[in-house]
Image 1: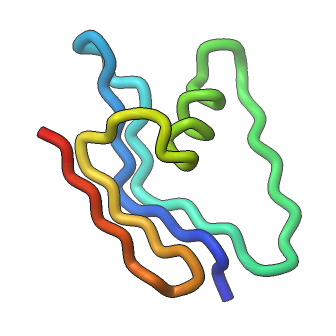
Image 2: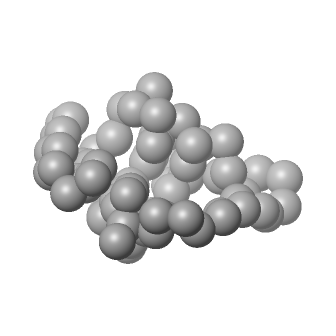
Length: 72
């Protein structure tokens, strides 16, 4: 069972596409690591998941409850 699922995550800053993630899921009891090169978008991704960054479109499921946020 997924405790966190996110779909269609897009982040665009100053005309530059920072994130474009089709889907992401963390299952209950799963250990997950986020790794990548400098500038790969790790911090931006965590900020998006923390709802600290503006999203163009976000659909998240947290413990099977659906949250939708659209900013245009």
